[in-house]
Length: 224
Image (cartoon, rainbow, N blue to C red):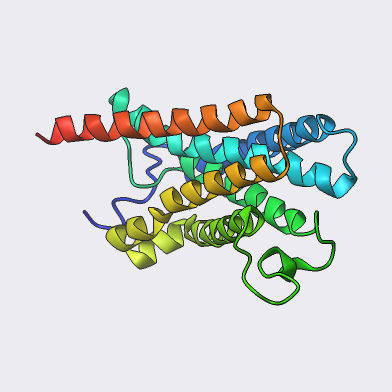
């Protein structure tokens, strides 16, 4: 399969129609993300503004990432075309990456204002080995993965890298999700989040994992 053949296909639609479709995606995802951020910020009225934004961006980033990862298994299970890259999944991923990186930048200013390095080392410049350090290491590496995925989220990268190399790099999304969940679990413990927020996290992660397993099983059945 050539890289050109694997680019998002528009069929009989014009490029102008594709532009309008993607613009609609970004408006919907952008407005939806902002609405979710406001909702989650209001759930913590006693926190200061920076803390509210940190929490407010955490859950929308989780939901967008989960939605992007669910599209592939849905296509497989419902026997729909599942190309290497297509606009809906790409645009969901872009917004997931944007919100995740905003959360990272803001989050590094919540507990130790202006001293970001202390999230990773203690006052004696030793690597942190507690839950706080674990949560920050996993979150930091996940952020780097999201930067990579954002850099891949365009036709030019797919064309230049070719399908196999592009797909290999894009699979780092799974590592990014695993690191994100580990980061979230650590901070559930650090901040002693109440049960409903823990349920949201574990339910979201469980749903994604279940559909990924079902999709992989379905693909294996088709290959036999």
